[in-house]
Image 1 (cartoon, one colour):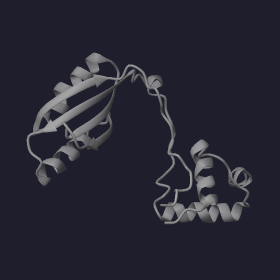
Image 2 (image 1 turned 90 degrees about the vertical axis):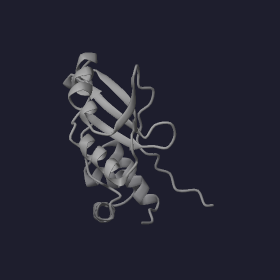
Image 3 (image 1 turned 135 degrees about the vertical axis):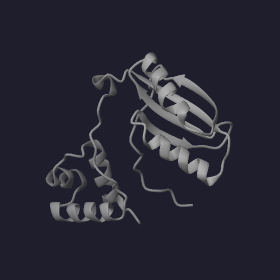
Image 4 (image 1 turned 60 degrees about the horizontal axis):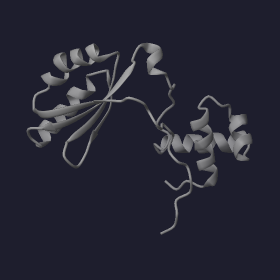
Length: 157
């Protein structure tokens, strides 16, 4: 789907405040409410806008630590990859999982309350997933950057 400058401006406004009214978005991008609504609906239908969420502070809910887990699997068969992904999807503390190239097969971001909570999660859930050959855990000490997608027009090649 081609996104023009108005679409990008609408997306930027929604990233800044997904609860903004159509009037507020229209004023920010220089369009009236109806064209804004039509563009938003078109981007939703095309899957550009995947949904609307609330950004919750993990510490406010007791999740004081973030752990990045690097995992290598025994096998790379389709069945192993599928079952591993399915098992990760059943663990609520797993926030993101990436199949990656390089020394490890997966990078997994996990929210935990503390080190004891992480040890419990490893023992009771992660290490019970069949096919894990090796894992390495790194506790995040501080988040240096968290941002939204950059919304600038693509540069012509």
